[in-house]
Image 1 (cartoon, one colour):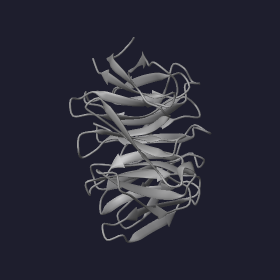
Image 2 (spheres, rainbow, N blue to C red):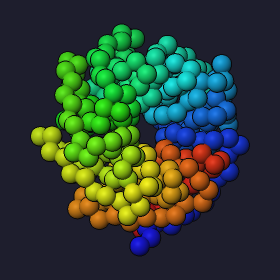
Image 3 (cartoon, one colour):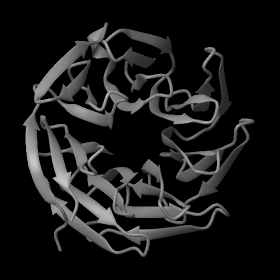
Image 4 (cartoon, helix red, strand yellow):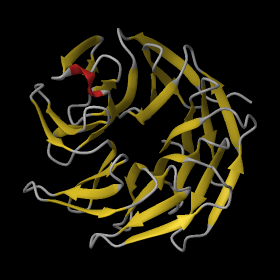
Length: 283
């Protein structure tokens, strides 16, 4: 069964990877190969080159300070860009995930094996986590959750930096994307085995196998319709799973979908590394 309708495809001169809605209502996205940050609004694309350009910007989110925050895994920087394009950064060891959470901006250092927080005053604190911590999200109860890609686990870190790890039942699941769900649980993708997972506040884990186990599910977010939406990097699909585990798909134009976000109208936007931003109206 297909879901939603493709509204339009915006061609981008580059390889979009992460995408989010900024505090200005525009779409902001990373250009991973080109080493730049892009902005799309009112039919126009503007790009801001990073210096140096080889940092491979990946995840981007709206911060709590009227700016956008992004990670440069290869360049070893946690970056910040203002709405008028002024960029600053903080040196890190292989940062990948970033999110707004209690007390500031939270991040993962995949290379160093650390999960941490940068407060509004610039103070940085962190806790060691082995196994390549990857994407990260805040839940509604004030905790922050993250995937441990090579540790095959879902982690939780509290505001006092206490870390709890929950091992996944399936070996080599390699979790990546993670999002607080509409049902009070946290949902995540298992790129290694082609499945979507759910973990509740007590740590109970449920896994839902995708029809194509080789589809490589990547990013996941809560949609405007009370379901979870996710990208499938290998199959080129946008997926949807409701809280009961029912799964549907929509074929996307282009290839290698990665990040996705929801705009103010309730439409989804998907970053296609093949060179486009795709707008989807959920059915």
